Image (tube, rainbow, N blue to C red; front, side):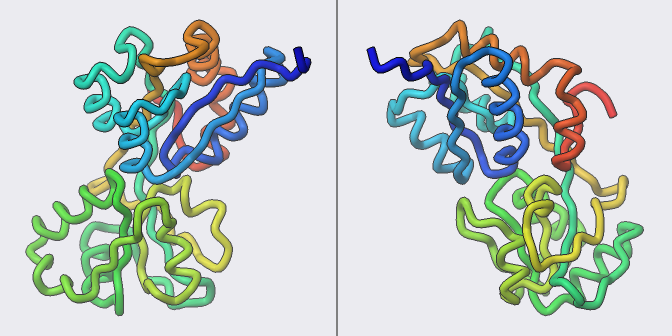
Length: 235
């Protein structure tokens, strides 16, 4: 035996990368088990699980977990809500800061922007529906830029490729070169629920369940808030 500690493995989307990294480190200290979570684009994460790659846990938006559950890729009895995350708006550092206080302000900011960036995740799908509802989707189509899977919208803003960007708040917090204007106003805010589950081919299913229980405990709520997310069942 090499004496290396056992390792719980996981895969997640980029939106939860930082919060899961902190929770994994905290759990390792508490349990003595190493926790290794790979964070990539959500679509790619789903595909790797569908292809049979072995992980102990998966953390993704609830609709992606729904899909994996329908394909018997995760244990439904292990499914838990990890955190909620809202959409935020950002521009490049030093750029003009449009108001986003009201729905009308956000609509005007979008119409005025040189380019608009969004992600392939749940927030991106919501924004496309919102632009359709506002009746401006066709007018701004040539200025909309979708970030490639696994690429942060914030990085496109920082490089000057996107003037006005929308993404989960948690994904903006760690990006240099951008100014976060704030969350979308309540009238048009959308909250994505990120869920965790034990994978059907988990090598350490009981340890995985214990890790998920830790990730949903009230003891770690402040870690979630610090990383731009909220506890799943409260403010």
